[in-house]
Image (cartoon, rainbow, N blue to C red):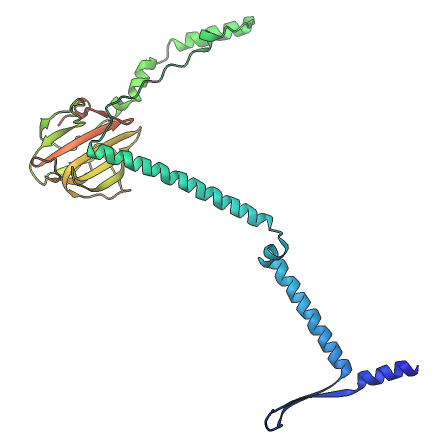
Length: 287
């Protein structure tokens, strides 16, 4: 009992913490407290510090650096970000190739080699003979379907209508054709002579993909239409549409001029490209 009483008495003993000036020994501040309160205060501070440390590590990015454990959601976000970056990089490369090809077309730099026509895919009957016995009901069903097919539209007519001939082209300009389409001489369009400052109109609905100045062909505007159709309008004096603008057929897009090294007077050099191949505009519209 005496040892326990002595310990309690020591804990109840009061201590004084004094802050003195080192030169004058003047008392600046003092704090009185028993040893019991000092122990409780120190323990409470230590517990609070531990709780704050654990909370900080658990709910902040420090957890990944200190423990090496990463959040599953964070990993998913990083993977998705890398995937988007990779997709954007591929899209950027594809756009660079597209713009390079477009620049070559505008400047008239095109390879003379023609694309080979893909070979027809062999039909199953050409290589494999099916040994299958048909029931009576299946034979009657096939006869009915074949008889109905006789009244369908001609496949060649449908295919022809779905091509470039099915479009109703709008003549971009009225004038005199001074130079015709000639792929042998690498003249992939027609030259239409007219008065200066005449309006140039879009031949079809589409989106402007190029609108800028080139040294060889002056001010050029190019429009991307549906079904892989591209139209080019060169040697303009003024361009009225910007890249990304959607235009309607017959809408004014530029003004006739005499710009570029290849120009010999006020005229419009008009080109029409279908599936990457130049075609003669005179086959589809009158000027």
